[in-house]
Image (tube, rainbow, N blue to C red; front, side, top):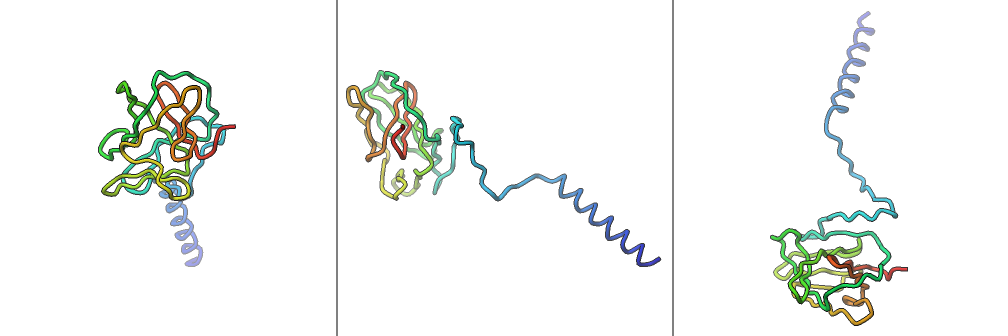
Length: 155
């Protein structure tokens, strides 16, 4: 009889523990990836305090823009931390594919997938007539209110 009572107590403790675990907040240690077809951008914290707005690899439409240059701005205390300003002072969202990261040292820098410097505060992107610009060799997709810097040229 004593053994049966011990098993019931042990079983009850296991059930109570499982119930308590089920009621707590869920935490996943595995990264979740958005579907490849997702076009939603997300903000991801890079090394340091600079947050880069993310974009999946995208196709680039031939949308006309009303600016001929944009200057990258980086400031960890601003929201967003990275943006661009056109020559007419229009503020553009800047989105980056996954391979880019940011450092928040004395001079914040955006680095490319190979660790090379791609941009820092004040980096200027000139828009060539009838073509898309490149930033440190990377394709820049233009939109009226945004720039997307892509690791690979759109197909």
